[in-house]
Length: 307
View 1 (cartoon, rainbow, N blue to C red):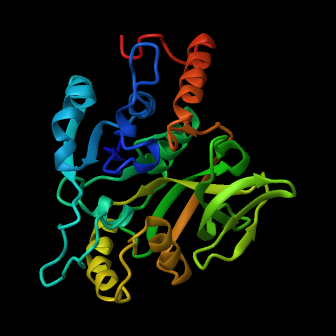
View 2 (spheres, rainbow, N blue to C red; view 1 turned 90 degrees about the vertical axis):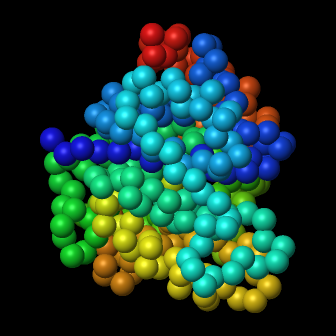
């Protein structure tokens, strides 16, 4: 069986959570954080290596709260995403404060990951089904040596991924009849209005959405060769940022979509009916804790997760 790695993007600033480190907020009855449940489900599915992408200033707290515990359960590595981590010759624009997005985050694991790997967000609960489906695809079907990149993703039902406390960003997907990705578009400000679901595209134009539409939650399965692609693309991205743009991001959905449109990648969409929840806003924390308590009561998880 192939080795497989779980890569967790945990370098976010957590600004909408009120300035706290939202990835480290306890939500489980034993003080577990959302990452604990993702790691539990990933290990149960068969993943055997964990790579945390963090900021260096979070390292001490991160290891104390979760890293040191997980090292007792699996092979653990750390990668660091920083604004200043850019190719030689590139310049950080004056006034830029945030790192360069999810594409840069994943690029930081180059050298640490040499096997098929799954990328997830630290502050999202995905459910067991998606981890099983992606791991099965990676070990049974993914061809890491193919000239056209072989990828997969979890496709969540949009209605199962909304927050009651504010708008969310999702990758709205179109899927071919054979189950491969036709298109993914980052859609911002998604929320329920009087006339249904709506959001905005990158240009700020309104987008109508269907509750049953499949969306990306940044749960991507990649071959290790994809890291070489990111390394090649990142300098071009930096070079082409318009002058004065301090918010441009090197984003996985856009990178994947460009490869799909160019015929350089195929993405198997593995749909899941599991309900997402996450700590996007400070007010989400209690709802997440309540959802975890119900899962424990239903026997999905033990009260002490890793006991």
